[in-house]
View: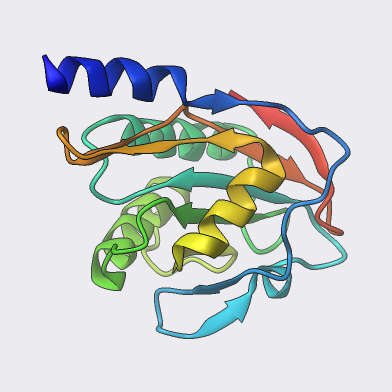
Length: 171
């Protein structure tokens, strides 16, 4: 019963409050798959948009499916990461090991480009305060469910301008 109540409460605490025209929290800091810490702003370039997803490596199903679908859609549109756009995935789990993040990035890169080390694809881990700051800035509501051992969240990708403004929500 406790588990059921937790899951129901989690379901009610998740979702997306769209904030189109708002700005993502660019001053937040994250570590990439090479161990370098950078501000989110450093992944933005003036000549291309950014697609931002909030995922985590140990998600039981949703995140991997979402990443697979995104890779398929980018490929169908013949969009090249690092040239036509940047892709950023921020882990919801502040405890996530960078090795797991690296594996998920390599899998996503292979799906999208056929190459495990594709430019323009960034999988990031960070501190809870920075993760929450980005999530809040884009209206993304998620919650950790202790009894299930995972995060409850909606699938979401946000299209951002080169300046970090929210231009579109992709559910």
